[in-house]
Length: 147
Image 1 (cartoon, rainbow, N blue to C red):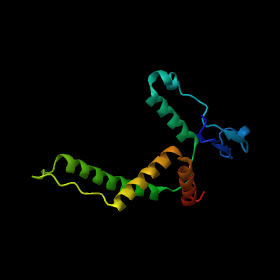
Image 2 (cartoon, rainbow, N blue to C red):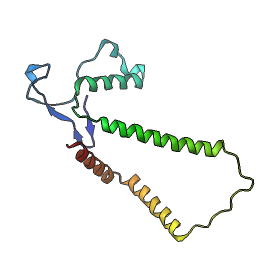
Image 3 (cartoon, rainbow, N blue to C red):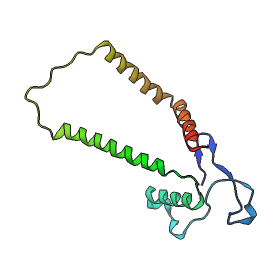
Image 4 (cartoon, helix red, strand yellow):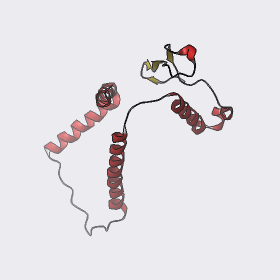
């Protein structure tokens, strides 16, 4: 299995802990190489089964030595915050008591209009040319993880 990000492939040098001594200190691309008897017809069974086999290979072959517990904690906190927000939106739309009179429309100011235009252009820019943002995020991740 090859792991690719953009135009680069994952490559590594096998260490002394490698199960195959003839490959120690040699460069390699690709992970895995064996198929279990239950993997006989991965594509015929469905994509979920194929994805399970690929994930198994990654977990069997890759050891990522990084303590990312803090990142998992941040992810759980952010998931709780976003869940509260989205559930609140659902409550507001479907379960709250309706007002007697609908609210009057509010005229948009020049500042509001400018904010909407700038935001729309930003979304369009990121949608059409995402590579600069992805590269910046990758660089930031490398700084955070010390890589």
